[in-house]
Length: 116
Length: 113
Image (cartoon, rainbow over all chains, first blue to last red; front, side):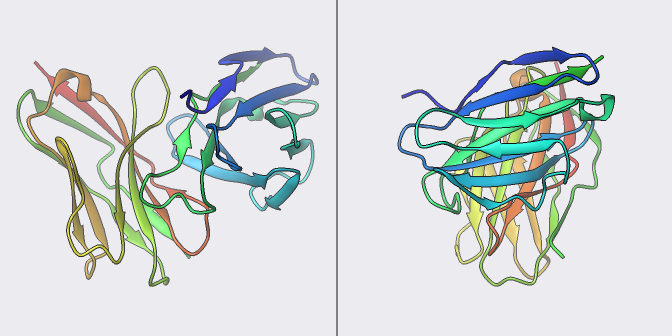
């Protein structure tokens, strides 16, 4: 039973390009969360999605960032016109319920985005 | 506002010794959960242990135990018989009525042979 799969593991983009980060949740999980981790810091919440719905995007920057979780396929975090400050590790997590209670949220291995 | 504080930026511990990683939290909710995650140098985030606010007993998972002191709002992680493979960043996080996880800044643990 595969865990949360994120790809690519590492992504390098030039300033101004677009970055697409993919996340396939654990089988049976319909709740997906995206977090960002800057160097030497803990994770910061970005967005919470269920299939075809954005439940909470309060942690998303107002511009250039968008997320989706279509009926079929992985969840996508999209960053348009990347800047150096977007360089970070982006983690996806999934859970069976809306709160990851006793078994926690299952995290993917993250995508490390480097903007050059 | 919810907050997690990890006051130890780094720790050195001799192999086979027990180690306690500190975590204090702040929330106005009555129902909440506390998590500890391990992040090795490879970068993935590994779930270690969970404590619910209404759990009367401290959580344990193998060599990991959570010293939960509700009145003090602390949830320290105890690792018994430390191993070289325990060297990593350790994060404490809080989930309350909101599903978002609030994270501390982490503690870098280095186990010395």
